[in-house]
Length: 390
View 1 (spheres, rainbow, N blue to C red):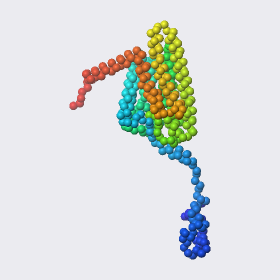
View 2: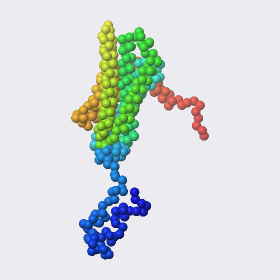
View 3: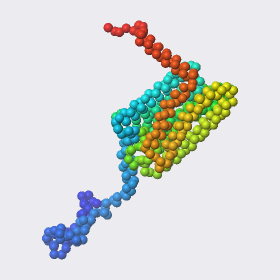
View 4: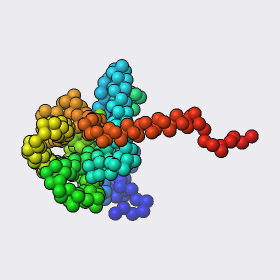
């Protein structure tokens, strides 16, 4: 260690300048040209490596990972269009889809909650499905609309993590709820005498709570695991919302294989639920085919087939988006697939589940009529006893 006030050069140079100078130059002022090439010159130029701590060697790749991962504060989402006219077209298209989903799901929620005749297990599950559809489409579409309207691509790091969590929460809970709904239809058609026993109010609440809870835990696990990875390949997300496969592309650590394993495990669980749903509908179709009435068979098929079509669309596009190999990943293809499983089902579910349901249509008609008449009554006949203060 160096003493206080002692420099590196003092510890390596001789104490007497005259002792260090070559012969013939003692007592004179030696110039740098005279010292150049001698051992005194080399001692002047050499650093004091004996007394300085050796630097810790950090690999360049690791330094780049640490620097880029800690410096990312925002992500850049994939735009639907680059020209202003197409951006505004995308904005108005998504605005119409979101308003239709909001209106349809809102009417189902309000009608089911207000009409006492719809307080049955089937409509209880349908109410939960509408809530999940509203949450799912409200997580991704508004941010994409805002980016197109303001001609930007930016989403904050925290906003991206929140968007990923809530989207996974709603979409996974919806899939688990669809599994419970298929069991409800199976018991109602194939075992009608045991319907009240197998699907009482307590059982329905437990099944719905299990679907919401499983979606929450799965989304929390995937989000925490994804955003714990070091990101060192930029901040451009090749999707119009934050999606796990696109964020994994930004990671250069082998730890991303852990999240890939979780995705594969989740897909196996989802495949098991899908097999259960398909098996339930197969039993339903077998029971329907034994009905003596042709009209009853046609009504049952027209109700169940659209359910299976939307379910197949959700499962096939979601599985393709999360498990496809990187070699067939193209921005335009990824964009279309993501719209098919994240935007289309929440928008068309109200039409599919209410178009052939006469009870629900009557409840919606009654609700709309009562709302319009109440609004007209309030406009034409002000509340009695209300006076402005002078």
